[in-house]
Structures are given as structure tokens and as C-alpha cells.
Image (cartoon, rainbow, N blue to C red; front, side, top):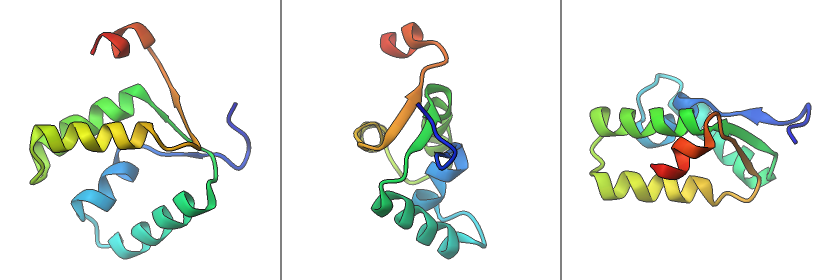
Length: 93
């Protein structure tokens, strides 16, 4: 269950450490590393992860197998809760 100290991670929050697309990249990278190291609860949705796949496919140097590995690694973060907006569709994918 998300708490008041949980952090919702949207598509750009996952993408920025990978794509380096922002003028604030260094600050965002430092915050990302701090969140991962602190094990603060992270919350995202399966829709956000689907958007991340689309973004990385069109706007990055990553090839499909690398993108799927990135998504798989995100899903293994122990302090991440993925809210499944439509779990059946996500499972089928």
C-alpha cells in the first residue's frame, strides 16, 4: 500500500536516467540514485511502463532486447509497487 512518503514515478522519471534529455539531468540522476539507495517506496503503473517502452523505442539508442531487459529490471526493484490498471492486458503482453 502506498504511503505518504511513497514516490510516484512517471514515464519521464524512468526515462531521464536512460535518455539524458533534460537540462536538469544531473539533479534528476542524483535524486533517482537517492531514491533507489534509500529503498523509499516507489509507485508506478503498468501504463507508465508501457509508455516507457514506446518512448525508449522511438527516442533512444536502445534496441528492443535492451528495452525489455530495462523493463524487467525495473520490475525487480524490491521497493517498487506497480499498480496494474488492467492486469489481464499486462499479463497477456
